[in-house]
Image 1 (tube, rainbow, N blue to C red):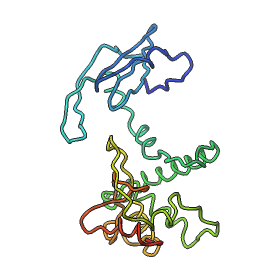
Image 2: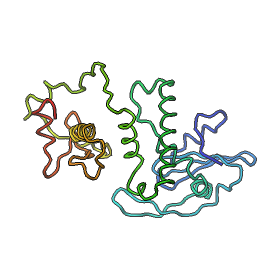
Image 3: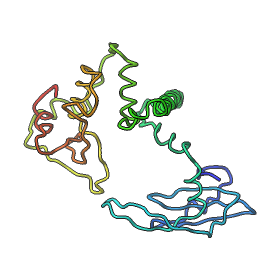
Image 4: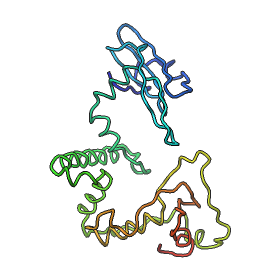
Length: 246
């Protein structure tokens, strides 16, 4: 058993066209002892198995965006897949590439994926050898520290790319700028000013732990051409619209 891509050869196309409206809904097609099943959690997921009854369902708790929990139906195929997949799926989640335009070129994307796999494997070994240190060290923090140590004091001499939002746009007519929030409220991104201040601090103080940093990278759903965090004590809004170097 395992997950399946919907564009695989001979995968039933009618199963891809089935509309699963509610969380916990499922649909299946079978031929002989081969079962193809689609189940909706937050989005539809497709499975293929040769050893499961697609009509045998169980229940599982899932958390909503507001923090409440609901009980939804889950096929036994999905339940056992989650139970036995171990670190395979987690590895794929942790090493997911946040693609830029350059990463869409497959040779570079493949090279970066190999590097991410190597870093994640070293993170697993780090957790095994130093369990006490690993308790408060997420993969992201580990990856940032690893990158800083790998780069060292080297700085590129390449010409920097032009800002997506030019200085003349963000520094002028400040009163005409308005904060916006996406209608779905799901587009949450790191504040550009906080991220820049955090990166500048980490370059100058590589040995300082994240919890001891005076500035931290804060996520925000609000944006004014770029994402900005607005909270008590924050100066990101004024810095972004009044300073060339935040």
